[in-house]
Length: 604
Image (cartoon, rainbow, N blue to C red):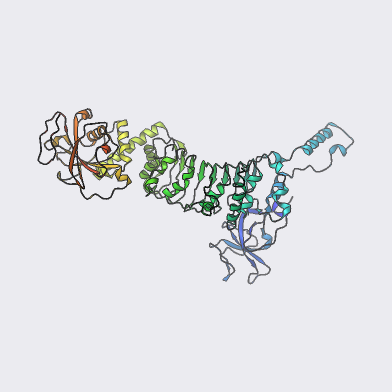
């Protein structure tokens, strides 16, 4: 029996037409030249192949459109084209013909065995029964739920005889999945009519087809007017998953396509070269003032050119209430930066259902900052993070487990309890070592110190820090404008009351620098000081007294006792004063006025 691509005569060839190698439908290309080639006979077809693979017979050589020094066409890349005979390429077959040839060729041929013999023995009777069962059985197409026509050489319908209308759609009433990837389709509008013709269709795979998008916008606008805004009627369509990998469709066009299918839950845009996120084209043209986007649960943006983390989240914000899985592997994300817009700085908290993120093979330079940023997703429990530059996958997994206490699966592997304990202890020791080497607690970011304190308390590991050499009388002036992160932090310079330097772990009464969130309670601050700066046991926290001193523009030096242990520091110290001196002493010691400190003794 002849193959599907040979049963129908090929249509006339023309430049720009999509073809595949005869007898090898997986080798697809575009015609760039038709005509003679110097020093040869007959007519040749210059084809630029989608892959660097071409038919072997009848091939002159691999080239970029130039043969023996003569330029016939210009290919998009070197060694991607060949010149072949017409008999070596095929224009493919129609979708309707592919369906019939694969699923409706079970027609019973030949006469009934009982009519060919007068002997009605057991064998003849059995053959007759089998013949009748096959003849009266329903077509295989009526029972099939999944049709795979990938690499079948399917082209756009150009004649009415092979259009889909000539296939009995009732015979496809059970169809749920249709795969027509890696074919010769160019008319996206025509193929997107299928979900409306087949209401039971739930999954449509159109990957690796080079669609002509120049005429698609007008079709999409007309489709929107007819089916989504016409008398408020709802179109029967149950499509849930749309796969558009390697089709060149950008984010804006993908959002416009999604508005056609209100039940859509998954959209795959793998390898489409997406780098920018733009608004819906339909809303810009006034066709839809408020695009009705479906409740997407999965978005695949792998192998694109995405480098702007805030812009990516902002583009996904319309799906924040339903999105559960986000795939961003093999992009250009160097850091998960915070948005410069204050209203978007905590956009991660809007993704209340997002539980799975894939960040494999991104050039992220600071894993600690990235994981601290990912802590903002309330429901995140699964993370894929490997193949980042400058760090091994094992170390990356360990740090991920330590910083993201809610994550249960890392790189598709369940986190064991012993593994988590080891990773969290490693993080405390890592921060402890960094404090000693860098000689400044202020080097820790806002999310590091609270996490380190939490883990240190859990495992009983004391945090150590070096003492920063400062002059006791230094004034903290010349503050730079505060950003969102700085406004949430408080830089405290801790010193013992003059005459009580023995409280410090060093012999000098120098200042100890601490950087803590403004939400830190006074009691928590005392415990932190006992761990990192003071020569006192932990059970002496209740006897420790503190007094805050600060000065800022327009206000002289102000002081205040820190007696309410349940009061956050941010409610005591003004936001305009990120730098504060804290004096410490023991409660049972008598205080006297000191000329270096401008406050009055508080009456008990």
